[in-house]
View: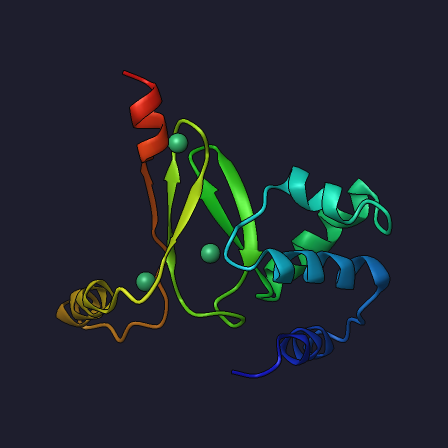
Length: 144
Ligand SMILES: [Zn+2]
Ligand SMILES: [Zn+2]
Ligand SMILES: [Zn+2]
């Protein structure tokens, strides 16, 4: 896989945007958090030394529109992470009680079922989104 930094810069360049300090701080925070999607509050806190709330919001908006960030809709809330261009395709299971997020990797059987489903309807699959909600083991055992 290519260097994430290169992908990031290419995506900005494609829309004639440059990597400002707040932008690269937001990108690096998400890159470091890797498979743990961040809430807007967590992201804002992570970069607060170089970017204020408004510029974080603006940056997230830009990143979403050019495919650097994916927004995971979890009920009425959302979390942010880098798009599939930066890491292996996966889905998330989120606990509805404590908000813990678990990433699903290498579920090839499931992925090929989705491809088959699209093919059955005459489509070649290019993308899909799926978020799974449930109650995690921790919450189950403490909440009888
Ligand atoms: Zn993820
Ligand atoms: Zn939980
Ligand atoms: Zn998938």
